[in-house]
Amino acid sequence: MSEVLSAPPELHADAHWQRIDFISDLHLSADTPRTYESWASYLRGTPADAVFILGDLFEVWVGDDSRFEGFEADCTKVLREAAAKRRLAFLVGNRDFLVGDALLADSGVTALADPTLLVAFGRRVLLTHGDALCLADTEYQKFRGMVRNPVWQQQFLAQPLEARREYARQVRQQSEARKKSQASPEEWADVDVPEALTWLRAASSTTMVHGHTHRPASQSLGEGCERHVLSDWELDHAPHRAEVLRLTRDGFERLPLAQALAG
View 1 (cartoon, rainbow, N blue to C red):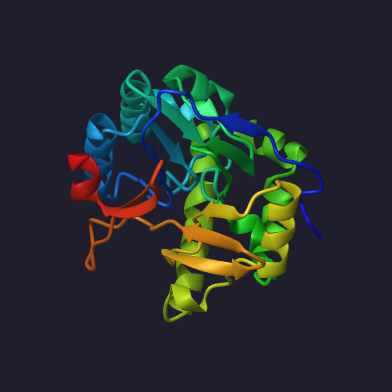
View 2: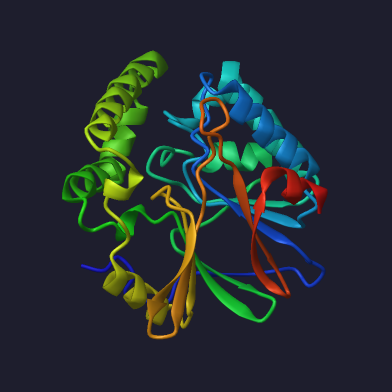
């Protein structure tokens, strides 16, 4: 059943914007120092007027009260510095769905609903993390339904911080074991095309940008619609990958990280 039964909220680009960047699936953690440093350098140096982070910025986020110490505090500082220079917007993913208003307000980041319709350069672009559209992954959809329930979240966040971190470690181990049972991301469930088209029709849009699947590509969905799938970032283990999707008045362009920083 579709999660989008009406038009999604709209965000209109500021008139002076010339470049809009989209990234997702960095899965930042203390165990990925090179990816973290590359992300921090990118946010500090990108020439983009706005950066939209479409989920899974963090490998795990167990509550906004974790932002005061350690790795989480370092990430919060980077977000705050970047948001002081340009519009920074964030849409939660399947790993960091507990990012809340406290972190975003503290760092000056704009919260995005999933999905959100971006109106920019005469285009209507539907933004989503993408996990809600992977309907064939029934096991994950059951888990998603549980953890997105406000009652579950309230009960989870009421636990001590260390207990939440231990739960997250267990879930991460289970997720890694599941991935290892599959040869590659190509075996993971992909976005359900009929459902994606339903979302696009509800938004009066023909273009979708999403992450989650770790299969970067720009593809036709049929019916005159297209999707741009964002790259995950991995700079701590070979093979390395890090890509930015940039939108200008000329359209979409996929840029290696170094090129994205060069302008």
